[in-house]
Length: 163
Image (cartoon, rainbow, N blue to C red):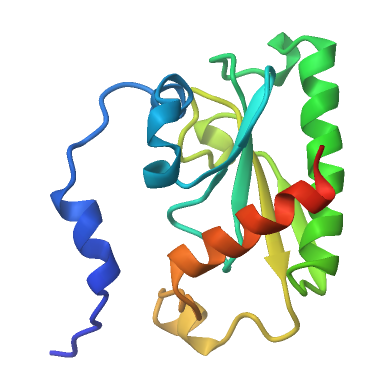
């Protein structure tokens, strides 16, 4: 048997499980922003690092309103999410060194949403050769840097790109 050591996962298996919508929990507990890896908040939405990222720097933009349907978001909220996405792309390219960025929303569990009850937009920085055989053959993603360091770097970049 082979072992893959991932000591950073110990927090996941030992921490208290959040009941209900995890995004509503994060929204309702701003005092826990550092612990929850929240990057930004305003009156319409917040940005939080994805705890199970596709790539280093993968975060989400999430409306404050609990809904599973983007058509229920008011126009001002949707425009703010879109503006933050655009500014986030610039930040990831200029400040984080990404060569490309994926933006996506999986609306509903049938569309692949892991947290289907609360819409959220994924912002994923990309680089040439950022995937390899282990993803396809071993069904394992290799996260190439320490999660907390990436969080701090992006959080420190935000004031320069997002007002």
